[in-house]
Image (cartoon, rainbow, N blue to C red; front, top):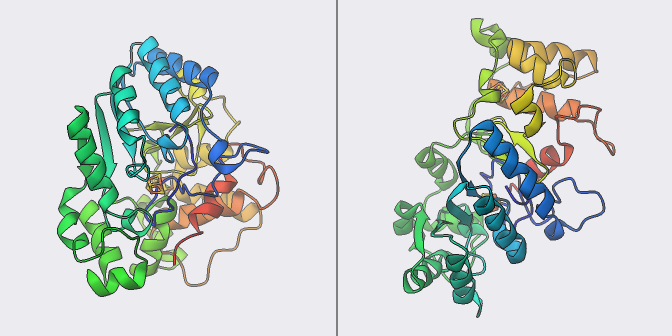
Length: 330
Ligand code: SF4
Ligand code: SF4
């Protein structure tokens, strides 16, 4: 993940990216915060050390800093890590230099783009843009796949030259398009998608959520390496459990005991243990309960992340993520 800033603020964004998301870079403007050459090189070295030989580049929106993107591509090539594809929401497809960018990428060895296409993205990027980018890719000889083309028949009920907000989508596609799209994707309700689950799923009390025998089970997927992400600061982001970040170097070489209490609580004894920790810090659970145990976990972590500069003193929690996850959903 070369950045956190994005031209969009999709309601399912697992990383809570947006135009106002800086990525936690003090003093930076949102779209200026991008992985630098040194960090790109360090991440590539760590990926090699950890046995990862193949990646994709995502964000945020990677094309917000084209030179930075080229720099990342070069560092991957230098480290002999293969690049499967670069993700983009296609916001730049109508620009006069779009084809030139594709030609530069091809010369740099990039051979595929993953271009977002679904009702959530179409709230921020006219859906003609991904289609235009796919056409330009074909003409330039760049591989391209639309993610996901099956949403096109629904989108074709709307004007593809414009973005459309919720009311228009509900009228043209279906009143339940938000939930239907989430189901079609099979999305994980983390990041900004916590709001989707909160809106559409029944709540359970904290007692009920913690009453299951599995409430104290360790959340071992926190260190799963099946499909993980590494952010612009060189931090490992667990698949699914976003909002927790650990330095990739420590994940590979050994996580110091006692340094990350939130991570340790979840990794050893699950959300039950995190609730104990949060209550000691004054956390009060919502009277209505939560839509799932993971939604409860999100709010526990948000409480522990604090509300001041530097957060609540837990280095593994990214305060900005929690704020941005709860913004833009309307
Ligand atoms: S899902 Fe992609 S396009 Fe949408 S806000 Fe997140 S990073 Fe941006
Ligand atoms: S309870 Fe928290 S740490 Fe465990 S799987 Fe859910 S989101 Fe991840």
